[in-house]
Image (cartoon, rainbow, N blue to C red):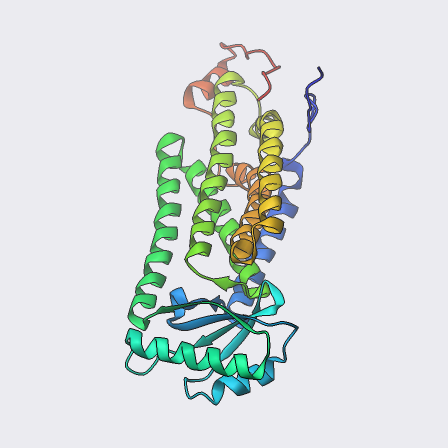
Length: 323
């Protein structure tokens, strides 16, 4: 039986040749992501913003202005409405209720539920959740700290495992991946909650896995082909690992695609973030992280440089085993 190969064994793409375009595109997208995040802001969920969130499903697509008017008449604070998953499911976000205890929250939920049931026949109450302002502030700090520590830890690992150029290029590529995800949430206004923090950390984990595989092959080939120019060596290494990179990305995307369409609206934001992370992570591994090693001035080992100067050590075979 013939094995399925998404990438032929004899691939020889010149990825480094496009590094100028790749760096320009990466910088442009990163700036746009930061800009749109500051301009539009993120749609923080109750986990981060604090307050009360009620999810209600209506028999037909409702008028948001009418819903807002009905909720505002209940004296539970200014309501923020958003469709959730489909046009008939609406999330109603309210500020922390006066008193802040469970009794005040339950009373507010019952008032809103009863009012919507009267005004919109067939409306169904789905769920509610609440977080205090103090807890939400702590969650924001802890979420940001978790992501920052993960990125810094990965950079330090790459520095000690390889050389400082590998650590810097890896951190830059991962920050790019996270900025793309951040800009995506600013544009789509998907709700950002603890699930999305988990998605960001998962994106970091996938990106570092892909980049470390390529970096490891580059270091291996630096010892194997002592006279090869760095540009040619990076192209060789990326092409050797390309079948694994593409196969891994495709299989994960197939699983995430099923989860996107069949996992329900609760997981939609998480799944969309993961899909974007896989795509941009694969791009940055191939075009950004590896090519940055040239810009950062990576050089061959001193022993290899001396061998090249004296001609005393012959190159290993030019054909390396495929990944």
